[in-house]
Length: 229
Ligand SMILES: Cc1cc2nc3c(=O)[nH]c(=O)nc-3n(C[C@H](O)[C@H](O)[C@H](O)COP(=O)(O)O)c2cc1C
Image (cartoon, rainbow, N blue to C red; front, side, top):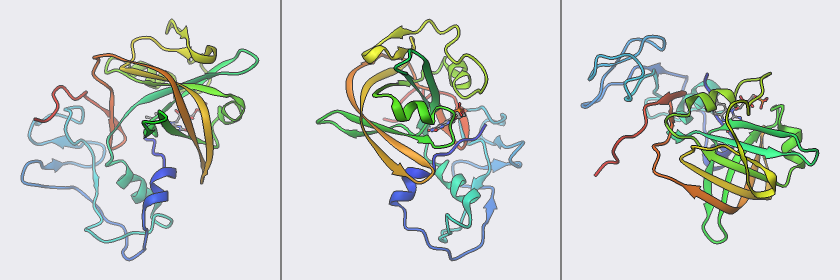
C-alpha cells in the first residue's frame, strides 16, 4: 500500500508548472536501478525490492519544476523520496472506545515546550473521534512491528487485537515493544488542506534501543543497521 501525506510539504513548497511529467529509472555512480515499478531490482545486490536499498521507479523531473496541482501523482512520488519512520497514533473516546491508525506524517515541532505533530486525513473513519479527544499517543514502530503497521491501516478489524496494550496518559492505549512512545495532550489543531494537523504537547515519553521501521518510496524498508559515520 502506498500512502503519502500531501498536507505539510505543500505549506513549504513553491510550486510552478513548467514541464510535463517524466517518470524514469534513475542511475548514478553508486546505484543503478533496473526494471519497472513491479520488478525493480537493486543492481548492487541483484536482489528484488526488499534489499534495503532503492527499490522503486524514481520520479525524475529532470530538474524542472512541476505543478503539484496538475501533476499530483508525480508530486506524491517526489514526496516519497523523504524517508520516514512509521508510527501508530492511538487515542480513547470519552465513552471508553479505543481508536487509532498508522501514520507516517509524524514530526518533531518544539523542545520547549516539548511538542510533536502528525496529520490526519479528513476522510479517515477516525476523523470525528480525533476531533473530540484531548489526548493521543504516538508509537514509533520497531523493525519487528510491521504487523502492527498493517493492523492499524486495515479497515473492519479490531486494530488493538493481540497487542496487550497498557494504559497511558488520559487512559490512552499504549502498545508495548515500540522504538519510542510519546504520550500527548492535544495542544492545537490546524487546517491542512485535506488533512488536519494535530499538534501534541508531550506529557511523557519512552525510548529504547530497538531499530525502527523505515518507510521509503511507498514501501517498508529494512531497518537501518548502522548510522553513517
Ligand atoms: C505507511 C502508512 C502511513 C500512513 N500515514 C497516514 C497519516 O499520516 N495520516 C493519515 O490520516 N492516514 C495515514 N495512513 C492511512 C491510515 O493508516 C488508514 O489506513 C486510513 O486512515 C484508513 O483507515 P481509517 O479510515 O479507519 O482511518 C497511512 C497508512 C499507511 C499504510
